[in-house]
Image 1: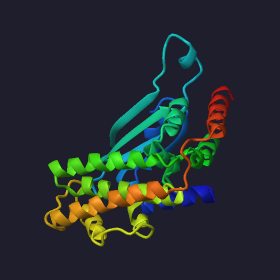
Image 2: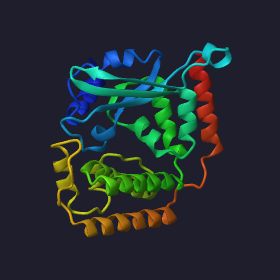
Image 3: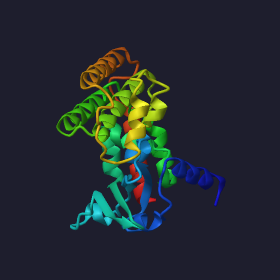
Length: 265
């Protein structure tokens, strides 16, 4: 195992990933993988002992599946139990993934730039290098909408998971608008963006059970006020952001050339 592989394995262990062999799950995908990374609660820094392992990435369809009568799967999903651990691998064909990158989709950028790497390639490295060029101030809309959805879920089911998702995506969006950096790890964000002081307590409680209830850890009115304040911070960060309005034509062209080169190489 190379030093890089050692570092990757150490990161996976530090994130609380199970020791199960992930390679059979990757092999079942059926097409060459561009990359596969860990997303979900393990990436966000608040996994529970019973959390599923969410694997996300990109695959490469053969040319025949794009130009022939039989269309290949632009999105593939493999789910199953491995050594008692629920795993879920979802990948998009490279062309679709690149298009999602251009649609102000913060979620795919988090997958692409996740430090929890279980499969990679030279194309993965090239995609990651192009990622900063697709970020615009309008990515704030993604995080604003994601937070609103999770907050509604929390309103109907007052569990720690949707609440932590709400707080995480707002802090990610604020930091992205201010710095241009995609950071999805909530404990790290607490050192980068002012946040309510009770968040570490919520993370600790979530570690006990995937669907743990809030159980009075924080007053409901204080939560509402804090979430509204973070929305205000995101609005202000977007208004003051130095990020561009649009993705540059050069980035679009570079992604196009990368997709073509990866397909015909």
